[in-house]
Amino acid sequence: MNNRVAFLSLHGCPVARLGEKDTGGMNVYLKEIAKHLGQLGIETDIYTRTHDPDDDQIIELGLNARVIHLKAGGYKYPKEDLHETVPEFIESLLAFQKREGLNYNVVHSHYWVSGFPGIELSKLWAVPHVSTFHTLAKSKLKARAEEKESELRIDMELKIIQESHGIVVSTESEVTDIHELYCKSERSSFKPNIRVIAPGVDLNMFKPADRNVARNKLGLSADKIIIYAGRVEPLKGIDIAIEAVAQLEQQESLKFLVIGGDLTSDSSLSDLKTLTSSLELDDTVEFIGSVTQSNLVEYYRAADVLIFPSYYESFGLVALEAMACGIPVIASRVGGLKTLIKNGETGYLIPFRCAEPFTEKLEIILANPSLRDAMGNTARLTAMGLGWEKAAEKLANFYNFLSGQSCLPSRHIANIF
Image (tube, rainbow, N blue to C red; front, side, top):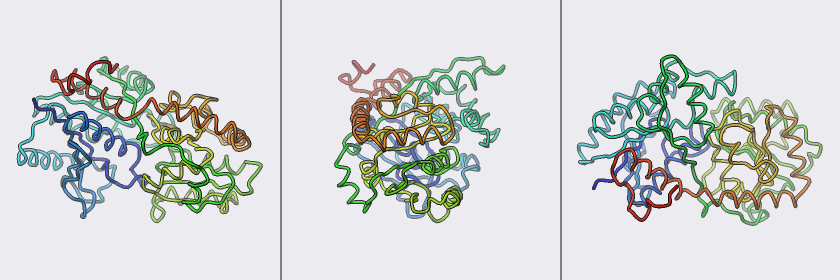
């Protein structure tokens, strides 16, 4: 029996460098979930656009998992116009499929712009279409008034919700948003088939280690270190974090490290540097840029605390990675972060999008090493229950339910839920 799944991801490539513009948690998700599906015996092909002339067409991720780069638009095609590349993407994919003699029993699209090819290929192949949005336009607009999203995206997300055989989300918050923001309109009185499957974390890579050893490896000498990690964009609220650091009473021997972004061409990063200078924090705030996963682990281990003041997070994979490394997280009480972080136990959840409450909680953790360590230990224990293996098994079970085929060997099907 064929056990092969096609992932579609025009927008993000799982082997792209993390932390740069338009690369983040979704890229990690694609790579890790595909690898772990492969370990379950499900051959998983991730189709994405060729983003660089040096890209190999096929990159093996591990057993039964690979990335396949397809010609679809120019290498630096603007994100807002990616929908224009869909016809060429479908054509390239079908040509590759025919040449390789491949058959799939599920097609799984990631992000809204991949939903249209998902719908079309589902019809052509007569297989179920599963969609994962990772972020929703209406959720972003609700979270931050200054956000701008096209009517095309909003209309397309509604169409994908209506025409998907199944939708995979990370948290119950996203289920609520889909029902409240998309399914209550006059033209969409329907109930989509949604399954909540939390992403995971690589517990072998992201694990605690000696803080001083990590700082020595990175050449960090400050007594107290705060970090932010992730994409650099207004929705992430990094300006709030900088303002919170500016209000700390004790600035001496303190560093706030902003990890992510392109140091050479990122306009959002430039704005944050201007803010930093205006607050006279040039000696305190350091912009690291994007780093490899192995270096990111060391930054987590070196930190006293992660600050994550995002306006909207469908899940918050960075927070989970930090927790797995045994450091507490101070984050906005939004989306998946509300269920991931246990307020007062693994960090703090802040209901307000302003600097003062973040400053207050930073001061508490930085002034109390025993509290920091206790929270970090509890955070690690929480993360231990969220490995990628469990996420992959639940996803494969959902595929099996939708397709009527056994994607999982029988020994894995029992006791998944």
